[in-house]
Length: 479
Image 1 (cartoon, rainbow, N blue to C red):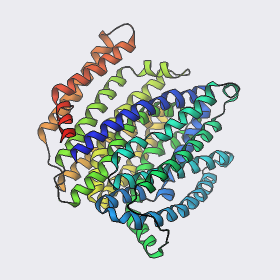
Image 2: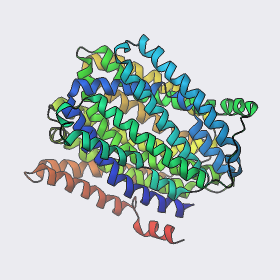
Image 3: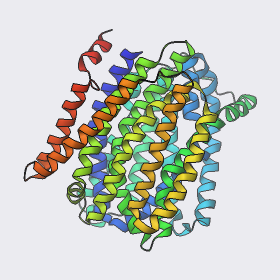
Image 4: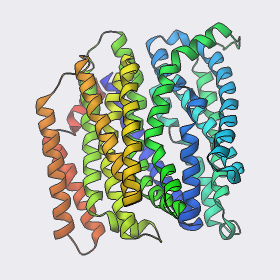
């Protein structure tokens, strides 16, 4: 299994690092610069609002299905038709919820945009569910190759709208949403073709009401995971927009910094999509998961700490480079948010392990407490420090979740507490901060060179401490 993980993480990183960063910084960033911070802030707030209601759309089916199919691949023919019909009903419920709660939240004037954002979320959920069947069936490489197909299409569509006359002179935020709709539709149809092609035999659409209710009942704990994690990761931008004067502007600033975190998180999410089915199958077969989890942790920790430490020292320069309206305030938000990536990256590994084991009750208890903490911190910090306060609240909450998930995994016997690894992790963090500090204050006059020197220095340190071991990766692939 380590061979599959090593090979597919290389494929995933190669594809996604080519496509997704270009979309995030070439397309999404350009959209914000073109339409303005306030208009983009409204879009980002509505998108976060739609994310919070995602429980009505997904209901935990993706993670549930990935775990179940990985443990017993024969279930796919029984589950697939019933879950597709179930998701149709959930999609309708989700759209009703978008309109009902949107009106209560004061977003009635944006119903048209909410409708398309909601439909896009339905397509995203469908794509993730279809891909969970591919990974559950063991077609990791096919899933890896399709992982960024929707973003590739968005780049083509949005590039035309942003840089080709007469579209570029009249560009609106709605066009960005419509382009996403078209790309997601094509991607969902393409992935459907590959799922059908890889099924063990022809699919029969016989709706089983008893099975459907059973699936809803069994996926509910997974749905609760989605709801709770979404609330404590997405509520901040809504609170910024509602609590502050010029809330849409501050939400836009937060969205600009969050774009960097999103770009970084895509790597962590790729780890999670690979680890969950693999760990589920290994635990089902009674195999030791420590080596696979350790490999995943070291790789993602090396990248997250190096990037966060380097970005922290060059926060203002990065924001001035990316955004025409940037101020030092924008950089401060980015600096705090990027350290959140370290904690989030860790939760992608240990959270996947706990999900694979099936202890969702304890996991949801952690998330419920995190919501209380996050909302309390936001109520205290946002009025004082605006979007910076929300970033600090996010960092505190995610850091606590990471620590609690690590303790839980060790207490359950899923993971051996590795004191040398903890010591090396702390040493690596301090070393990266020192490298970032030296690069910033004693580097080149052109800051961009100093920034890349900081990244390269962190990379060398990760090699020296054994977080990245190319020989081990090659050995895993050759096995």
